[in-house]
Image 1 (cartoon, rainbow, N blue to C red):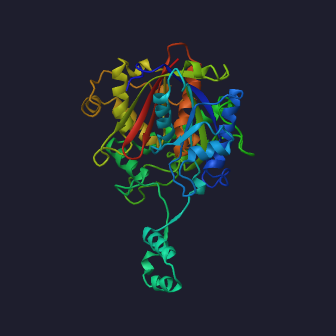
Image 2: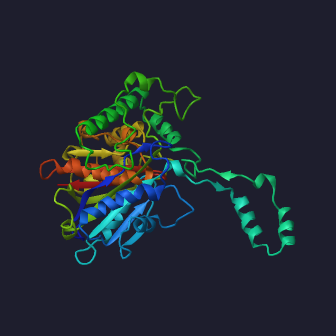
Image 3: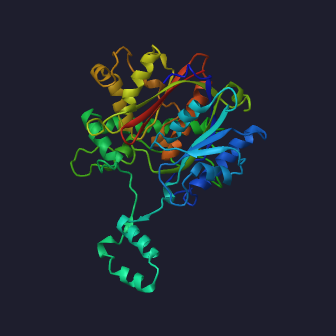
Length: 426
């Protein structure tokens, strides 16, 4: 969908929490507690003003709340008059929130939206099996002691148990890593290539922190002041020694803990605004125009589960008459190093672009040197609901430092065979 029928939409970089490994430095904080300081910091930029609405999301559900966005805004003492709703699209969650907000803004009474997302993988709530849940509900409805005693006989031993959420696709029963192993084999992505990409991601993330790139993008949460995941001391040799994580039996597994994004806790945010809404923000906040976006959905029973962005990117570029070389910055979410590598391989494959994306393969060679200059999710971490706002804010800051007319593509793959891609410009 083109943005030409709407007012010009801008993205202004938000802040995020540090990202930390599951059961690590942020383990005591649930999704609301992680989000609240991020929202308070964002609201502090407005000098008493407020956005017209907020969009917030998390991928892992919690029985304690249904509209996470509203709970976060109330906990952060945002004016109750600010409408807030939750959204979800797996790993694309807070990017979809940006796209939703962009479509809702106008030049009259909706000029500024706060968007973000969160994941507390350390505080995943366990549930009861469905048969046990059904039995308990019916047991509670029994009115007399006799009815309750009688109902006890209906409980079967096999019904008693816990439901433990897992990072798997419901249709296939396979994890994201298992699906990625399959696609990596189809595209012949070697373990060495994956480890090399992972090493570069860590090196770039560490360098970004050391030169202060993240200083105004990440706020302290308690005693945690920076991401805990980037590894300065890692090497190809250390990565190569890690065992396969998802295909442990065939002898051909290539995905490891070192070249896959880790389960991560964290929250992130971003502003979505019209020109007049942008005026409410400090001039120091980096900003870029949201030119256009594309969402792709594919049949993951026949295509790679995480391949959708490779379908979306050529369509988005073709709509604007652009080639890969016309894009000065590429931010591609690293669910796995292999996934980034087979995306690039597909984008350079003429048959794939023509037959799958439905475009003529006139885009040229992919400029790998422009990819994820300050590290990606393999090194920085991947709190599912937070990654969209993280990667967009990071891209906005990187792009804002480039000459006028520079463009960026930001891409995220998502479970369910879906993916979202945004085209930005300064």
